[in-house]
Image 1 (cartoon, rainbow, N blue to C red):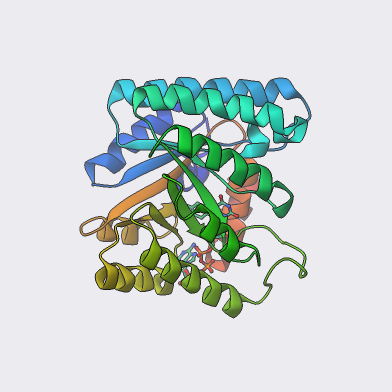
Image 2 (image 1 turned 90 degrees about the vertical axis):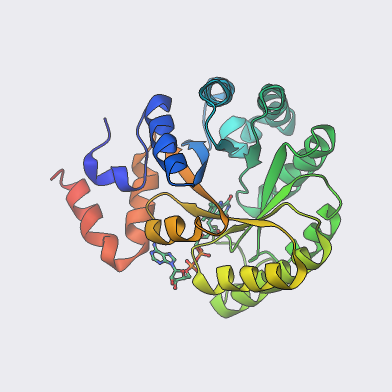
Length: 278
Ligand code: FAD
């Protein structure tokens, strides 16, 4: 059992707890992106086990008829053991999901994984038209070029600012520059994509810009936010737009919870209480 204090950001340890949370979101018009927590394993068996759990999860989602997708991390399903291991596990997840009509997102990790992740996305999205999406990061200098390359791939792209501390040679380090890049990427996408745009941000300025661009170009889009972050905004936006909540679950919840809790000053007390077990 996860402590109640962590349950703001993590749906539980078992898939059934995550799906219960999804049901409550669906009742309020918010869909879900379910993520089994895990990354960078020492043992390949852990990566294969997570890939198996994802296949079972998409079956559970399909059986329970929930408004939910899944999101996987490349290092979680074997990229550290070779691109072939990652591809094999991802293909099996995507094939199971495609058979059952469940959408699969691929999270983006640090810059050493970008090529392998985008290549896998492009191939699988072309094979499973409309069933796969990938995340791109506005802080990477390469991303404008990547998005141009992916413009005609029949999938979805989640635009995020980027969560990894990348070297200055390949990444923008200044917050204002990342925000400017993020908006430039959205402008390109709303002008050039037919659909498949996902705004993975809590930033009201980025969401407002997406809404303006949607009104200008008519291109559909969805908004994605993390469980426990601006929950009220999620439910309010869902009255007018398509909103997805990213719902993490699993036994490896501790480091994820501490990261979320330490992100903002007002959450620090949360983290301290969890650490001292009260
Ligand atoms: P920030 O730049 O952190 O904040 C801007 C403004 O947003 C703040 O000033 C405030 O007004 C508001 N805000 C932000 N956080 C809060 C809060 N906790 N409470 C209240 N207001 C807040 N990164 C990756 O590198 N790879 C991924 O695959 C990936 N997937 C993601 C999926 C989703 C659904 C989301 C939401 C994010 C994902 N990220 C991913 C993380 C992302 O890259 C950013 O690190 C993270 O979202 C913080 O940037 P931001 O745009 O939300 O806003």
